[in-house]
Amino acid sequence: MKIIKIIPILLINFSCSAQTNLEKYVIDDDGITVEKTDSNKQYDDVYNSNNIIYTVGKKFTYSYFYQNTKGEKFLIKRGKPVLQPEGYSTYDWDFINFEKQDSETITHLILKPSSGNPFGKNFPDYNQTAISYEYLMKNGKSLTMEMTGVIENEMNIWMHPPRSNFFEILELNPFPYLNAPYKIGTKWNWKLQIGDHWSDKRWLEWKGGIENVYDYEIKENKIISTKLGDLECYNVQATAKSRIGETELISYFNSKFGFVKLEYKNIDGTKTVLELEKVE
Image (cartoon, rainbow, N blue to C red; front, top):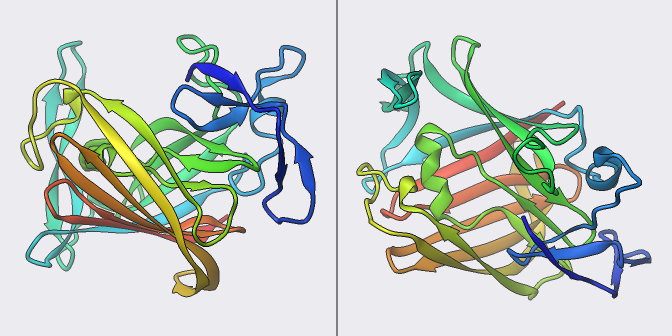
């Protein structure tokens, strides 16, 4: 992401216990606050060392399900091989009824923060904590892994969702995002250009690029029941609008575990729900 503006302000930190000079932060061209590049420091010292939640070495395991407009629940499984133009093969995916899982059903997603810049060759100015998503099948094998990023600092926490195979549908939804000040009533927005290579006849096809316009608001701060127990969470409600339609996200954020539940309403009216089950 391209850096365009330095923030010379003071901000109360996440715990709201002290003020921190944020001249070291910048706003990128997507409107998200990131750490300022420092040529005298290693990549991890700039973008990873101040993380509290998404720290290198942790593993976040999420369960998920997809729900169609009839209310029926599904998971996904590995489909047929697909030969790519470059000469290598990937796998397509199929839905499988939630109650009829087999050994190749993807049952969990595993998020792992990692050190360094895995995109350094093509994107030397990359400014996020690298994360991977592994797609774990019922037989214990990982189907695939994708690399992407998360941004965590006093100003905001912003995360790429999983976006391989079926989860490409989440590109059209609001991304998980919490913005300061961390209190009920805080509102913010941002925009993202999305190409038509994300279109798919299984949810929606379109031609040409679109611009998603996102609006977020912290609606509540309350204790909710989760798979990790009863946790105090911010309830953040968000919408994304473009010329092809509207999507939604209700996210639940905990100061210790991060995004513990993500409830997406997809572009075709279906739902995708991810819930954090374990942190190691």
